[in-house]
Image (cartoon, rainbow, N blue to C red; front, side, top):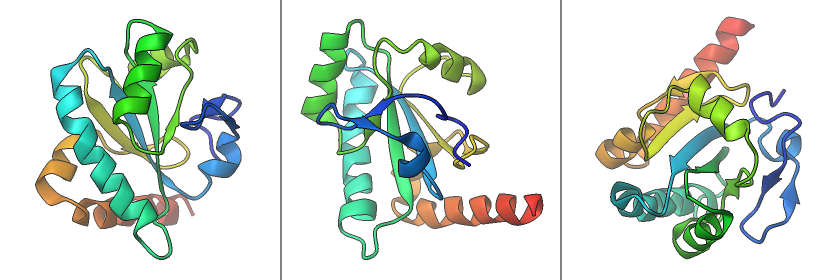
Length: 156
């Protein structure tokens, strides 16, 4: 059950509505809090793009991983520009969706960029996704999968 974005509208990079229940099922999800006005965000986003491309587009089969961008941009136009210019081919919560504030509170987001890695139900695997990608590269994904499996086995 995809709980964290259940009942929400998510968009792909082309602006089409995507069903989170279908798209995020059985996946590790990176919730990426970021904004185009933020220099550290603009520094990390290309690294995240490479990571995502290697996992999704160059793996056979593609890794069970998805990113959802949560914008902290000042306007929908700023979000769209940043999303299209710098982001990978992942999903986003629409700029106007106030659920972003609930997510910021739930995951204790006090600054951006922040990449929170969660199971599909929203349970945190790590709040240090950005640091782990920088330090470990693709190897961190295997660790995330192991933690997700441990959660799954524990819950039974």
